[in-house]
Length: 396
Image 1: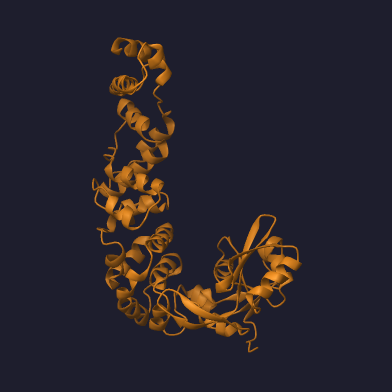
Image 2: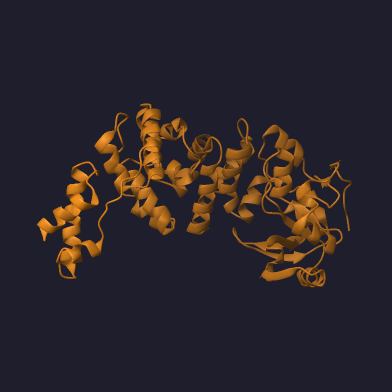
């Protein structure tokens, strides 16, 4: 097995490597290492979440060794060399070292190897090709640590080759640039990204939206989106995107649907986009509300604010205030404070109140309640349950 000397050593190894499922997996698989994002984020001083491990064994042997060590094993992707080990409800994804035999722009035919450098060479970016063993030694074959420190998102090897292997890497590049990049990317990378645009239709809608969400969660996504526009990538995956200035002005949470709403024209139904990118029902509902609810003015208070809160959850109303501020530049800090201080009004009647008032079961119940609720809303959402029941009896 060809290997290079470790580039650095952490003393002591990070806590997440010395406990729980990651420690048990590394103990069960001598020579295994943590790989990819977990090593990158540990070096960047960012929170570490899911731990991925690679090991110089075929997948069947990995599964057998883990089972023998007392871990639960789920063969989540055995044909691709991956299993999931679980200890005390903590999962660790474990993958055999691999080399590519053939690729089609999205998926690869692989063979197992024991060569760590060969496995690292098939990864996308230099700082994702880092690996760390149980003692905290770091292997860095392609200068990933230096690139991470300098804020460079650099492909492993030739950018065009890496992109042709998997066109999802086009979107991953901009996602990582939004989170780690500093300054302008290398010209050769931008040229390769521009040339790879015709391959983007091969990507599934779910993967496109997943990458866009992750990009929109990062710091300064407007800068990465501007680069995407310059290379033609944004027009290929999100042709609806308009002016980036409102997103750049947003002084609100790093929530992807809120940020996406600022790329789209206010008042425009987003159904075509949400269907094309296969949003979840909740995501589609939220985007519609952000785009189709009239933006709250900075001076909204009293009955108008109560009506808005009666129709929408306070968290959404707060986001509407953030979005309106980003679009028109008018400060809404006072409005957000009033939203937080105003209890959400709840219409006090239910179907049983209509039946008690003498209405027969059926459509008349809903219609009568709707009329009373419209009156309750029009009067500022302050009428009591008894006042609403009296109104209901009159409507009956």
